[in-house]
Amino acid sequence: MFLAKGRKQSLRTICAALTGAFLLGFVTLLLKPSSYILDIQDAPTHSTIFNSQLYVQGPPTQRFRDNLRNDTKYITSWTSAGWTNDVITYGNLIYLALITDRIPIIPKFLSNHIDPSAPPFVFGEVIDVPRLSQSIGIHLLQWHEVKDPESQVLDDLGCWSVWETVQQHIEIPEPRKSPSLNLLKLDVSWTRTPAWVELTSLSKQHNHASFWSLASLGFPEARASSLALSPTNHPSPQHQVSLPPDDHLLCFDFLYYISAHHTWEWELDYSPAWRFVGQHMRWTASMEMLADAHARRAMNVSLNEPTPPYITIHIRHGDFREQCEEVPVDQCFASLPVIARRVSEVQEELRTLKGIQVTHIIMTSDESDPEWWSEVRALGWTWVDYAAERTEEIYGKWHPVFIDAIIQSNGIGFVGTRGSTMSTLASRRVQSWHGGATRLISWGSPGADDH
Image (cartoon, rainbow, N blue to C red; front, side):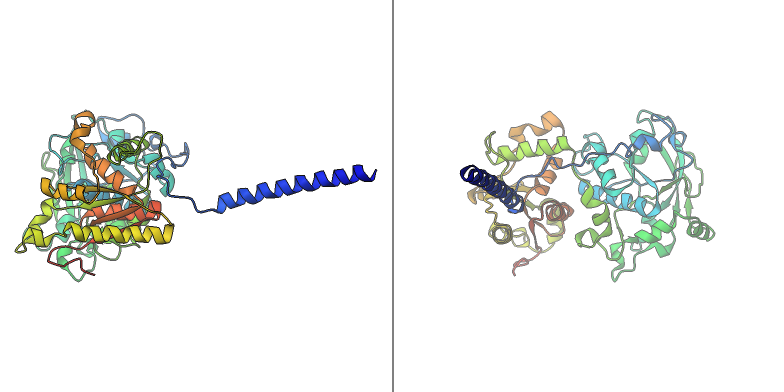
């Protein structure tokens, strides 16, 4: 009896000990800091509530107004700049939609700074719209869901012109035109916004307007008092019709230069448009996978290995040469040793704070000098060879730009060019999405980045 009882207790003790060891090991595994893993599959499950079709009458119509619901108010704007600036513009538009309680209607991206022959690109084919809607809590529409892209019907529309108000340094300011208006067959009558929409700034040449000033025009009182002042109105170019700004579809000519408190606000960590919209503008899964495949080939990663942590560099020269003015280009732009110093700082920060040793460096740049690229290679860095990949031939002219931006955003570290919006957004994404380390390089004069 004694032996049997003792054997039972021993077995119970062993089982308890094994269970405790398992639980301890499991908890330790959960709490152990994990190494960096590229996150391209963490999109949330999208609720069926976020269905854009709930906010139109049905399929795209010949006239946009026939597809708008009477119980819903909308807001839209258009672009006429480079692609990254247009991403910011649409971020600002969506933030305005948030604070005015309206449904934003997003146009396609235009290829102004890529290649005029490239067709417009659908917003939702590069930005994950269901995920964005889920994250920010409002629905989004795209223009091709509202009006038939093949429609030849010219719609009349009254809109506010912000650009005409803030362009104080121009003798005769005008509304900002966009090729999107012709593509969408919109004949717009512009009304100048009141002077009080301007953002108070020490520099009048920054030409910014205030989010909440513009938002107030979407509500009855500010709208009525503004129109009572008989603001400048421009008849539509085709039908020559003078219309007040539409209230059902609130619209503005250009929303890039918009801030809450300070000019160039997307560069600042508190930026409401970035915090409440921009950081939630994630890439579609198909674009993520395409960019990851390009990055892996650039780093010579074998098929059975995960994508390693990497640091991306974005060096913009191209049109920035014009800003060098009297300074020779080789003294105006940061040299490769200066860039390498910033890369080393990012590597050290990642090693110290995250325990990650990053050796893969991917360069993205518009520099065309073969000798410069040879020096990049000599540093042990790599890049995506779009010619060898036949990326444009296979996917189209837009894709090298998209892939560069996605690779930049998915690094655990980033080094960019101060003043470039592409670098600004890449830096913000790396910080927000991966908790990564970033640096922006100053330039414009010899020793500009000394520190």
